Structure formats: structure tokens, C-alpha cells
Image (cartoon, rainbow, N blue to C red):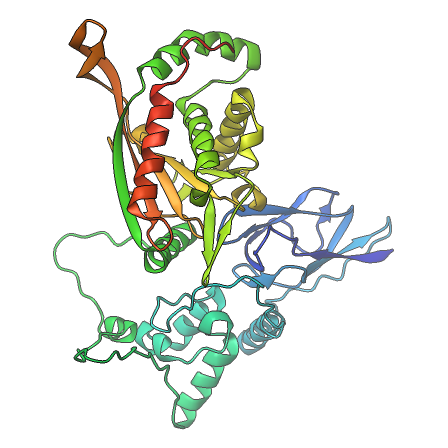
Length: 448
């Protein structure tokens, strides 16, 4: 008989920690190798952690909603036919011992030093929106700490995050009547600019909000909170500009209609417009590689790999962006299968953390839900995102050898949001129109 450690797995590049959503096994229960033991979540995707061996769950070292660093032991499994379980329950005991265990477990997370990435990132001002771990929020709720108080607590964690140690120290000082150190929000002062009153987040939350009339209050789920964080951060980081173009995709529509049944019979997969759009975008990225880059401090990092993110709506209404890695190395059949695989995995909750990492350019199809155009927000750290609208039949003027005439064509609007720090209007518009021409000049006689 021996003990096997189950550790928090590596969940992809740049992911340093994960939140335990749900334990599917309890101490004393048997588990098979590769059987799911718990469900976890990162800021990108939910995932499952399987057992690494057959045995019996001996000990769970963390509770649900705990944030655990990658590589940390989260459970222990007894192996061998005569394994006798002496389960350890983190929440056993009276209220005070449960709290003590909770704080000790949190210490296991917070005492691990943060290893900063070697990448250079833009400075985050101290006035940006703050986010808190479930543990800190639970302590705040149980101790009656308002959001206004929480916003004022000086954080010593990563990016100024309030840790368990910070909130416990604040509680001790508040109970003893000792002076409390508040978080300082710095406002940059520029010459020749008159100072104006600034409303800080703490002031925003200090007064309870009351609602009149018949309302329904819905708490954001974890994914919605992360989407909100990423979107507001992107608008703060990048200087967003959006350009629009109109394109005639009649050739593409007619070709797909002609081959879709044969394609499905041969490949066992339905061909949508998305892989056709991605194919055209890739050709234009090769001509204008600056669209496939990122900004790190004062440096522009041009990516040689073309990894296309495809925005996908989830059944719950949230959005996720799985990534087709090395998309330029796939033919149309390969792109179609990857698009279908990732979209299905996203909708059924089977995406792996690596499936959403490493994107260099994103395509979002706002036309799926009937929008004719959109102004999408850049998916950081990328510098551009393209939106394709719904395809509609419209009367348009076309030029022929016999002169101008009016015809019914399949028309679509496309838009490109780009980071004006490094992509000027000329390049953004040039790239966008190159994509429009690529769509318009689609070879309607191409073979499968």
C-alpha cells in the first residue's frame, strides 16, 4: 500500500492557478485510473482532473471554491488491494476549527511565491477594476465587510490582489481599533491640466444601491465575470479603431450550396462558412503579418505561427474563443474538421485549457444571430479581430462587358477592430479590403 499524490495539472501556457469547482469523489470512495475526481476552472475554460491511478481517496487537501496553484498536491490516493482509508475531512470539527482549517488551507496557496512571466506587459494602474478570490469574498461576507471596505484594503498579492493574509490583518486591526492602512489610488498629474474630482471604485460601492419598480437581480456566474474583466481590460489596453467593408460573397455561397452534401458524405462533417472565411483571412495575414502580432511594452512581437481564434457562443449565453493552432498549415477539409470539433467541444463543455490558448488573430461571426455588422473588442494580447455579418441578398450594380446592370447578389459586411498603437488606418483598411476581395474572388469552380 502506498500514497499517490494528485496534483493540480498544468493547464496551459500562462495559467498559474485554478479554482476547484466541485469534488466528484469523497474520502473513502474508490476511484479508477483516468476517472474524474474533480472539476476545476481557470479564467479561460472549465476542465476535469482525472485520477492518476486506481485506489481509494484518502484525503482532500482543498475545498470547493479554493484557488490552487498549478503543481500543488490537491488530494492523496491510497493504492493497493488492502488500502484502508482514514479519511481527512477539511471541514470537520466545530466552527472555529473549520475557519482555522480554511485559513490554513488558504495559506498553502498564498505562501507560494508568484513567479512573474518574462513577458513585458503594460503597467496596470492601481485604479483598475479589482477582482477577488472566492476565499476572500467568503471571508468578507462572513465578517460583514462591505465592497467599499474591500476596495480600500491594501493588497499585497499579485497585481495588488487582496490575499487572505491582507483581509485577516485588516480584521484584526478593525477589531482592536488600531489605525487601518487604506489602499491609495494614484491619479497621474499632468502639467497645464486642471485637477478634477475623481470618483474611485471604493466611492462607487460605498453607498448601497436601491432599485425601484419590478426588477430581477441576477448574479454573474464565474465565466461572465471573467468576460467582463477581459473586455474592460482590452478597452483600457488597446486603442480601438473599427473599419468596415462590403463584399459580394455570391461565388462562395453558390459553391458551398453545390458541394455541401457531397462534402458531408465524403468527410462525415458539415461545411459551414466559417472555414471558408478563415481560409481567406489566413491568405491576407500572410500578406500583412503585422495583423498577426502583439504589443509587449515598447516592442512589437510579430507571430510567425498563425493561430486563429473563433468566437463561439455557449448554450448559457457566454462566449469562449477556442483556437485553431497553425491554421495556415491546414487545407479546407482540415479547417472544417477543426472548426466543427472545437465548436462542439465548446458547447458540450469538453474544451481543454490549451484549446483556448495561443491565439494570434480572432474571427467572430456576428451574422450567426442576424447582425449585419459589429464592432468587436480585441482579444488580448492580439491586435486585431474581424467580424463577419449575416449574408443577405441585395440588388447591386455590377459591371459587365455590355455595361452596368442591376443583379441580385449575396452581400455581407465585414469589420475589423484593430489596435491603433501599432496599426494605422491605412494598414487596417488595406487588410480589410484585401479580405473582402479574397471573399469576392472565391473560386466557384474549385474542386473538393
